[in-house]
Length: 331
Ligand SMILES: C[S@@+](CC[C@H](N)C(=O)[O-])C[C@H]1O[C@@H](n2cnc3c(N)ncnc32)[C@H](O)[C@@H]1O
Figure 1 (tube, rainbow, N blue to C red):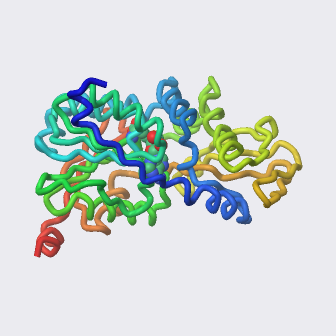
Figure 2: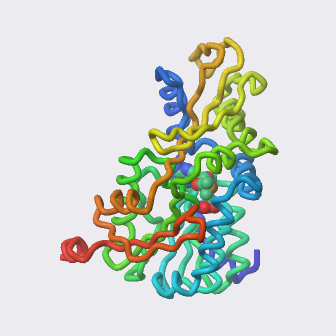
């Protein structure tokens, strides 16, 4: 790292996973429908596999979202305003934000992610690539209320939440998260969010069942992560990937299916699996623009602008706190 970038790069590890992985896994596997929260997909291999999923021909969200940003870059940057603090929960490879960084010239970019080592290496790369921008990276769990690692003074805060990660929350949890974002950006800031849209189920089913089997590896890697961290004995050859669009609930569901009757030991716990019993590992809710705006409205976030691709596959939406709430907050 150059001295120049070292001055501008800060890294904070709040060690979010250490306290909760064991409890979440034991609790989740004790439910009638076994489940494990999707945030545990993202160890270093999981993060790399997610990047590989984004490059598969079937996975339209990443390339569509990037094209929307590229095609509307000037209008988006005009909305966000220069010299802001750009905060990205779940920043991953920080690939999409590069499109904004090139033109927006924020005062500070804050990537926040649960995958500590991956975040650290991405932040180092960014600090070198953008020596004029302060980079403050923090390893956090964004499902907790977010506290920034240092003061941002009076600078305008913009939260950037692409990738339709909002779809991984249950709708009411999404409202809680949006409320946390509204608190974070304060009355003068904004939220730029990527939201995947409802569409032909065949497109959705293909996107989560790519031909190369990378999504399957990503799903199964969750068990490898748990084996390593909790000294568990999941046999990865005895589980398979299943993903399907649940039209009634408007969501993709991802599961790991036990292919035999088996038992799995995790620390002092033993879990029984019937043949074909599943662990529910992820939901990805799809919304119409109107449905999503109704969720944001519940926490006082008002739509300012929506950008979409021509086929209406994906949307980028920009929100600010509505003025009556802003006035109350600044009293
Ligand atoms: C689907 S990727 C999206 C990456 C990037 N924002 C994009 O749109 O391409 C999700 C990222 O969020 C991170 N993540 C998932 N759950 C998280 C949580 N609860 N707290 C913080 N980061 C989380 C993962 O480590 C991963 O890097």
